Every structure is written in structure tokens, then in C-alpha cells.
Length: 242
Ligand SMILES: [Zn+2]
Image (cartoon, rainbow, N blue to C red; front, side, top):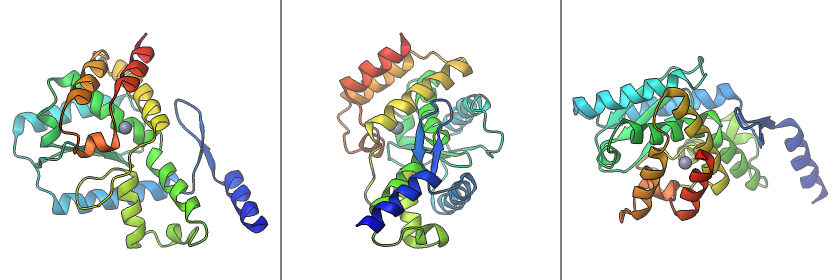
């Protein structure tokens, strides 16, 4: 037991990073580079297997809004790409490295560029705040009795890939989706709204969009299971916008 505590303490000392923007310290067992390599690999797999939407108007909208948010995200090391995938999933996610995916199912709920900016800036915020890597690190700590750093050494291992997919809410075929914690959601809302503002979008859309999500009956959606919307969240956004 003492040994275990020592290991945990050592990890906290060696593996703490701090978030961009909010400067919160976070447990991080994954380097930026490792995380980005996994993101690139995952993006390749998605593009090989998923169906790209042929809807030219929605595709342009995703690119237009995505590029505008990316331009203010201050990540010149990211190779940004924006893809619209054909699928009923109400989902969108951003992988480390800057590959952003949106499903047509989500586009059907988005009324205009401002609302799409809410989703994209929120997803991009999760990634630049490294929430996925933080979740992977936390999961890894929980499995400390098993393989601690083994997963990182064998980054191609299937269990690692599935952990990555869960941590980044990569859509479809990954089984259980891990909801982001309330603190991660709040942080992504704050930074997302800051990005929207910098990019010149109407930040009030954050309220209307999440209100719409909260009243939407489609509670089985991927997006809502990982990003639950309720009155607490909307109140918190109203506070941010004050
Ligand atoms: Zn979120």
C-alpha cells in the first residue's frame, strides 16, 4: 500500500501539466506529441471507414465556421481539417492535432453559423485543454494495479485505442461513451465562448443552442450522453456571458 502511494505521489510530481487559458494543473501521463500522434492515427481510421457527406452547403458551413475558430485557437502546430460525415449520430468531436468531425445528424439541429460555432468552439476547447489526455491519464491511474505505463509504451495496443476513442468521444463503434465531467464541461464552455468571441460570433447562441439541446427529446444522442445539458449548465453559461 505504501509502495502504491509512493508511485502515485511520484506520478503527480512528474506528470502534472497545466491547461492553456485557464491555467489549472492537470494530471498528464501523455505528452503533447504522443497525444497528437494518436489523434492523427484515429483520424486516418475514421476517414477510411466513415462516409463523407455529399451535402455541399453543410460541408462548406463546417469548413467556414471551423477555420474561423481554428484561426483564433492559437495552435499553429495543429494541422486543422474539418470533415462532415454522413450519419444520424448527433455528434461532433475534435481530435488532438486538429482533425474535427461533425455528423450530418448534428447539422440538422444547428440553425445557423453561430450555433455551429458553439459546438465547434466547445469541441476545440476540450482538445486544446487536453481533456481527453487528462481522462486517459485518470483512467490509467485507476488501473494502477494492472499496467501503468504499459499502455503508453504500446500506444498501438487495442485497449489503448479504445481508451483513446472513449476519452475523445470518437463516434460510433466504440461502445461505452464516457461523459465529460461537469468541471471539464464548464471549462470547455468558458474557453469555447472565449474562442467564439475572438472569432466574432454571437456568443448568445451558446444559450439558445444548449437550451435547445436540453429540451430535445433525443436523449440517446452521442453528443448529449457525453455533453449533458440541463438548467445548471445553462445558468453557468449565462454567468460566463455576464
Ligand atoms: Zn463537452
